[in-house]
Image (tube, rainbow, N blue to C red; front, top):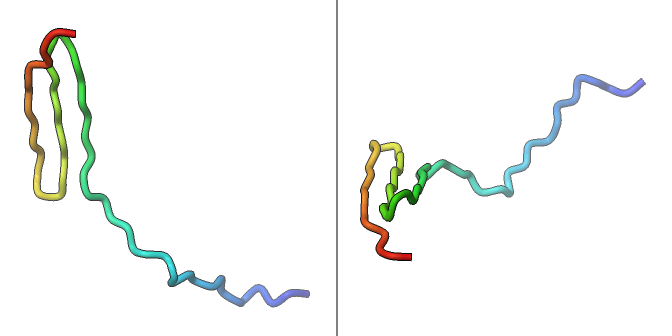
Length: 52
């Protein structure tokens, strides 16, 4: 019977990862809305997209 008390090995060769930012970009009616959330807060902007 196998020894089930052994713990799985932990990989230490992978770099640590962290979330930098999350956001969304929407284009509607010739305007572009951008919203970005970071650890420090939320920022956003609305710009005109020009003619297509």
